[in-house]
Image 1: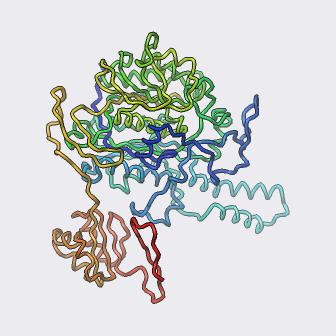
Image 2: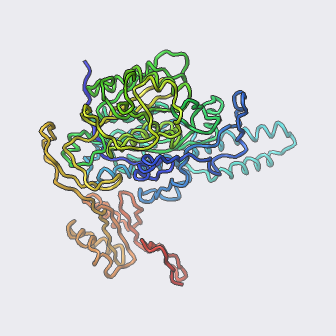
Length: 617
C-alpha cells in the first residue's frame, strides 16, 4: 500500500533564464513563443574553438566545438550584492551562480509575500539542484595552481636556456591575467555553498544543501523539499536549480559526445531533431503545505499532488536513457497522488524533458505510451499537450526541471496551454502516444469529464536518474483578483461544500506594503547611542517618521531595514562600540561621514523616476 503525499502549494516563484530577468517576462515569453536562443556572447570563450561539423565527420577534437548557439543570461544577470550585506570587493572572488541563486531565492520569497508570510526561521529550508561543473572561479583557481606549474615546467623542458627568473616572469604574467588571488575563490570548491549562502544571507535556519542528480537535479530537490514538508520537519521550503556554466570544457565534452546539435537548432520531438543546445539559468519555487497556505491566505500558483524518483538499474550504458526507469518514476508520482496516469482526461499538459536528441526523445515517447497509455482512436482535441521549454531557452542542465515546473505552474495559474517551438514535423512515435504539440498558446478549456486542470513535469539525467512531478490547479475555494506573477495578491474566498479548508480562517484580504526603513541621525555617535537608549516604541516612532528622521541631521547616521527588537538591540551594541556597521543583520551605521576633507566632492545621487538629471557644478 502506497502512502499518499500531502498536497503542497507553490506560493512563490522566481527565475533568471535566457530572455527572462523575472517571472513576468518568462510568462510572456512562454505565452508568445519567444525563442531566446542566441550565439555565444563575446568573452565567454575564444571564437577560435568553433569549427562547424563537416558531413560524415567523426567526433570533434578535444579543443574544438562545432556549435556556438545556446541560451545565455549575460545581459540579465545583475545582482545588487550590497542589499544582502555582501561588499562589492568580495564579488570577483565569488562564484557567479551563488550570487544569482541568492538573488533569485530572495525574489521567490518576496513573491510569496515577503517577511510577513514567513514561519519561524528554523522551519525554513533550502534545497538546490546544482552540478559539480567547472565554474568560473573554480577554473581560475585550477589554472592558478595546476596550469601555471604545468606551463612553466613544460617551457623549462622545451626551452632549457630559459633561466629560473624568466620562468618566474612567465608564471607571474600568466597568473596576473587570471585576476587577483582572493581567498573567496576557494569557496567554489564546495558546491553546497550555493544553498548555504542563501540560508546565511536570508537567515534561514532549516536544512540547506545541494543535490546533484545530473539533469534531474532540480526536480529531485523538489521531491526532497516535499518530503521535508510532509514529515513536518519544516513549514516552508525553497527548492529549485542553478546552472551558470558555459565553460569551453563543458562544450568540448558535449561536442565529443555528439550531443550538441550540428544544425545548431534545438527541436524537441521533431522528426529531424539532432541534439541539444546548452542553456543556463536559475529557478526557485517556495513551497508550503496546502492547508497552511490556505490558513495564511497565500496566493497559490499550483498544487503538487505527487512526486516520484527512480533509477534505471543495469542498462546498456550510463548515458543511454531507459524507458523502464522513466516509467517507474512517473507511476510512483501518480501513485503518491492517488491518481491513475492512464485514466481518460488524467491530465491536460505534460512538460517533457524533451532534450531533442534522437535517443532521448525516442525513449521518452516510449515512456509516454507505457505510463499514460496509447493514443489510438483519440481526436486531436482530446489529446493532452506535450511541451518542452528547452525549445525556447536550451537545456539548462540541473535547472532544467525547475524551468519546466515553473512553466507548468504558470500554465495552470493562467489556464493557458503553451506552445513548443520548432516541431512542425513531429517525431513518428508521437502519433502512438496520447499527446500532441501546440504551435501557439490557447486557452485551457476543461473537458466536461475533467474535474480539474492537471499537469505533470519530467526530468531525466545521465546515469539513469528519473524524476516526475504531478501538479493541479489551485483549489476552487480561491479567487485571485488582478494578479500577475511577481505581484502581491488580493485574495477572497468563495464557499465550496466539496472542499474542507484549514481550520484557521484566512484574512479577507492582504495587500503588499513597502518595506519599513528606520533612519536616525545625530551630531555624534554618542548622541546617536543616547537616542537609541529609549524604549523600542519611541525609537521606532522617531526613526520611521519621514518628517522627523533627519531633522537637525548630523554626520552620525543609522539605518535599519524592517526594524524589530532584535535589530534594534544589534544597533544599540554597534552604537556603543562607536565603529561602522556595514549591513550585517540589515543594520547600517556610520559614526562619521565617508568623506571629511575640504576637497572631497564625491556624491551618490538616486534620482528615482527622473530620467534626466544634471548634477550641480
